Length: 202
Image 1 (cartoon, one colour):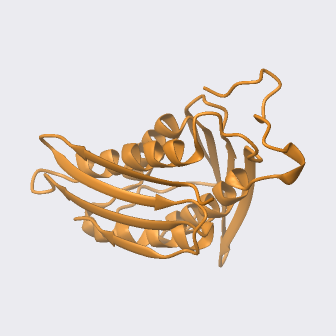
Image 2: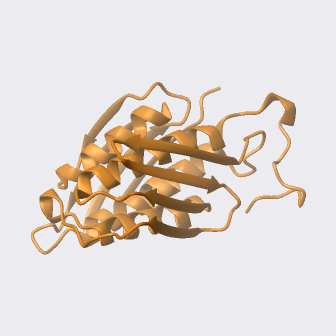
Image 3: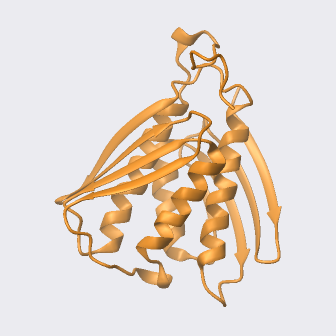
């Protein structure tokens, strides 16, 4: 049985429709007003072996903050819904590295029911801006929204950060896909048990 979710969220700022299959093959149909984020999400989905259909409109004529943040919110909710209320049988923890030239992104995740996001840089992290006005702060807001709505502790570390924002974020979105794939994998040794000594993951 494949773990799937569909969510539609409408506000005065954004209209978002998402269809997610955790047990997919990396297929995407992504259309948002932020082309740079589209590319990052395609990398995330491909390396996580998820299937994602995402359609977004938003008030990007003002700025991209609301749209970027709301996409993170909806994706987090979609993964939480697809995993099911009890999250039975999943490995829960995942970690992965993704290198790009001298830069290495690392993601560590715990689907614990507690939303938390942390970023660390090993080396100087210059102020950066990418295409579509995407800045590093947008990445932080996106991941914070994703973590809180999925209910996961999400920790990123970047080693030897590049002067190029694209390089830095590509390593982290790829490592997120790899780590989340690992954390959501069903472990046959669990035999459908909830992966917590408390017997519950909220």
